[in-house]
Length: 321
Image (cartoon, rainbow, N blue to C red; front, side):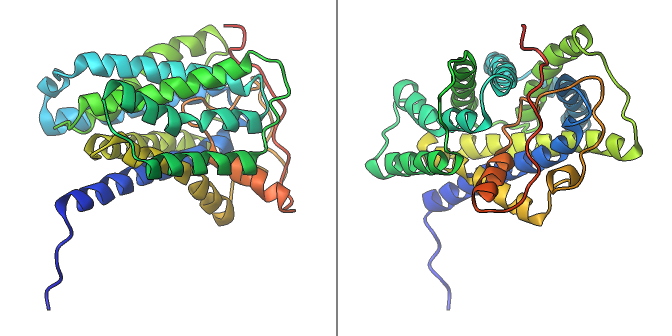
């Protein structure tokens, strides 16, 4: 007996949602790897190294499969704009995390689905039904309940966090404007190029490059690049193939589920209660291009009585810029 095929639009919607959720999954996996390095290396080094390795990876893929002419995309203006949003988001997240509590940061940064949907309504003229608005508000309310932000500090860090959310929401709009890209690797190549152009000079202007101290560290530095690459590709495919932006935007909250998944599978040793690795002379912040949803899961675990290592003290990286 043959089953009735699903409507094309419904299959496409499921495909777009699944791609976006898998993109956030790989971002979370990259978070876990990165956090095992951030205790001993400057965040600018992690961002710059990730960008350089990722740029070499994506550039090689494009050249091998499509030739150098593939870089001459007609969407170059939108990719340039996307590079600006990626750099802005990275810069603002770093500074926000250096100035305000993590719970307050999440209380603001998870405005991204709401901001993304509002931008789609204003600039893309999309119609958003009450059920989707309800899903967005319900997800944001869940974040507030779990994270428990106080917003008690009078700090410019809140402006940085809000700016990061605006940049992230705008990034989703840019992906929608780019639309279906024949050379999908370009979805990751140009953001990595922008990050490299910004964070490599910043690294040498601030802390300087520190050689990884162990073979494991070398492997982890290299591993962040393909994880970030897969996250960017799948996230971009999800938003570009969705019928409406608001269809995918609420699933940003799936990052909390991925965070719980990685927390239960086993975090790096210094996050699971073992002694932290030695600190280098460069005390650093959490990396900026990734938003660390697994820390939200850790906060939830603490409130439920699980014993976890307290988060590292705040440190400065580019606060004065």
